[in-house]
Length: 372
Image (tube, rainbow, N blue to C red; front, side):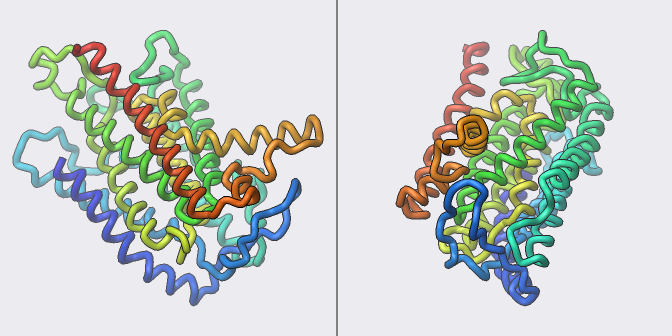
């Protein structure tokens, strides 16, 4: 637990005090977020007041998370009590942090093009999708083809809910394909949820905090802990490096809170696609690593709602020529209805928090079902 707390605190402090420095540097570089003034379907919300606000702030909390993980991992090596610790970074850490950094890099290229062109068009949809596909495929193969000494891989060849579902075997190739699809889906879902000050940041913090709890709970009831198994445990989780998962998710959540201090309304900096795609990639990765793939749509229900609103709008407009919402994603619909930005963000956070609680309830209830 000490290592998880250390990683959380370091991530928070680095982001809290590093973000003002990043703001000053991005302002000097004139790396301001271009404001969208038109849309292919319907009106756009009035965001002229945000013009000039620097973007690419995701660089800060990605960097803070990586540093926090390193310090947290060092803290593990100094714990006197029994620990199952690998001195060098684990494959799990390399996969999760790799997804965070390289999905963020795809977003960084998108943000950089927007800044240079001074408009809201960055990478093409195909270009962005190609980048996400490459990142997902590379780390998907690492996750499925590099087992640890106890034969566990980061990903699983079975589809999972609370744990692996034994009869849903899809093989390694199928698992890599699922890995890629999940990374693309989650990174785009977080990106779509972004757009209002603090919305995606706060929602991501809640989801990552939930997965940090799940990872630590799995560590406490881990099939890889031989002492726990010899004690006659009736319930264990067959995952790889759950403590590392908990530490990385906690570090990212802490860094997110530190960034949120400056990203909350009125935002001094935006995370940009750098942060949104990076967070989405990490969230998809921790869901796969904790064997909770089908639980993710519940825990990340807010992201599903926002992504679903875009899909519904597109299908409706292309098939009937009519719009279901004044604008999609859903948060912009409520802006055009007349809700204030702060009200939308807080109410969406409440919805996101409820989804997290329901998801954790499913996770813990399965443990109670067996142990009770």
